[in-house]
Image (cartoon, rainbow, N blue to C red; front, top):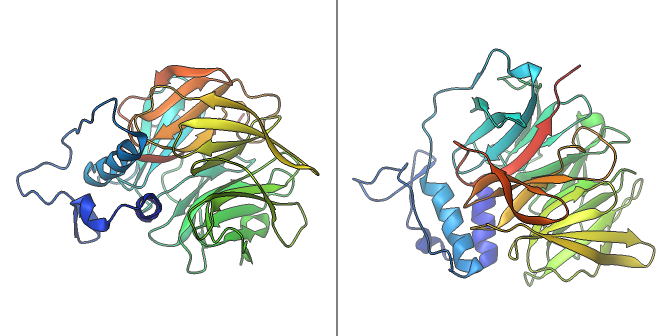
Length: 343
């Protein structure tokens, strides 16, 4: 839920407009006779800013009951898509590409944008507890827990060249060597608020966020470097950051576009964009199915999260309208990755 609060703060939304009450650490609807699972609708033509606010509210008041983690007995045999939801404090697990719901994880209080390592393990930042949970493919209980050193972890990425785990917090970036132990902290004075990050194929880490005035910022932590290199990039709002096999892709929180960015010694240049049509709210994280778990080649499909629609897939880089929407999915999803079945 902390990620949603931070996003609403960035949008300039006063807390009172949420019209939600907190009871025992769970966001609930203030109306005594209103079910938290009731669906909410919003005009299709509404401005993106208002739709973004609505999507966050919807994620806050549409909560599922906690019934404990569960997983189908044959889930491990399939490629699995993990969709996190800070709104419901659950992680939905689907077989991919069939989109069958295989299980739900309830171990995190505030699961944010997840990531995977080369072994297919899933790392889930828990902003509410300040931890990063590690799950084995198809597992229902964490097999390791890393401490975020008092920070609120929102996103993560694993370096394909070293196995180092980068955790993006609201004020800094933590890097756990070999995804264990005590992390090294990296801060960027030009980007005091960091949101999303991702490694390229060479082990360079790219991060987006905002400056003190709320303007979009983009930076690189080159492999082996102790400091960030900042670039000028004109986007409206920070979104997910992923390697697409050729370029670093950066999501725009406001425009529903994914931008392909080429980075070299001359700077960062937008060389293309993908519009994800059919969106009802801002896009947080996205992934490329053939590139998760250290895959190679150029991305051909993209799967993304949307606070209004849920989880869906599109052709890439063509975009357009969704090829598939994952049914019975999380309300207010914040992260999505695919863990391939172990051969």
